[in-house]
Image (tube, rainbow, N blue to C red; front, side):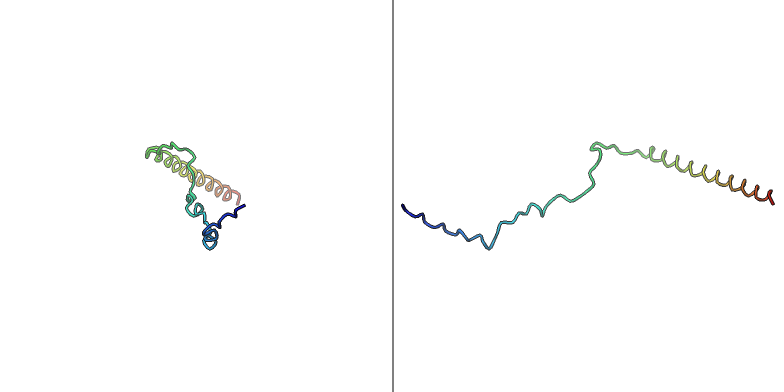
Length: 79
């Protein structure tokens, strides 16, 4: 039986192992959108929401002033 000839350069890649570069260029982490087909919010809708919160803040402030005055009057009446 004939012995096969040795392969040329069989150990040639020993100093340069194969490197998997697929991990180097992965996608950057970003928040994923919940809905792919989102619609822009109109300026009117934004203004309506902000007006609602401004009105609510104004009413709460007025209620606070009324309650503060009532408490002050009761304290003055008690003395």
